[in-house]
Length: 145
Image 1 (cartoon, rainbow, N blue to C red):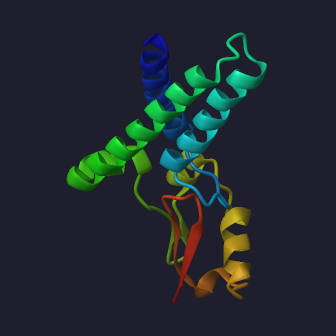
Image 2 (cartoon, helix red, strand yellow):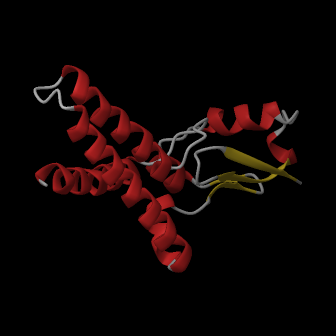
Image 3 (cartoon, rainbow, N blue to C red):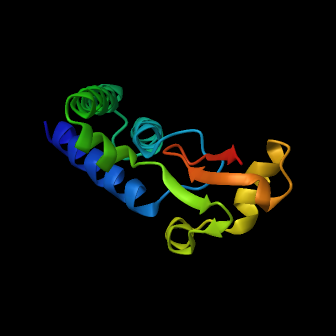
């Protein structure tokens, strides 16, 4: 039973840690999805190389995390503010030629990251960008002028 409790506690701790660390461009997963994949991988490896080689113990922890994932996903749908806390919201990085430096510094994003995203859309001139938005999954969306 302690495995279930430890899995639940660590799931939420890891979710908070990943959320606090912020997003980087190029990521295709939300922090919520990243936690699930990372945590299940960590739990699984314990059954192989950890002190407890019990497959049933690892399976119990993985099932606990899977149930928590489904429960949190359901709660995010019913309580929109919870979804914004866990997954974040899109953030404005550039608005009509004006860089949002505070947001960019907080998310550890540089001008070159935004311009790289613009170039993938065939835009090489800063003046052609109306908005650059850091999406919840870490990608950068470019809206042309």
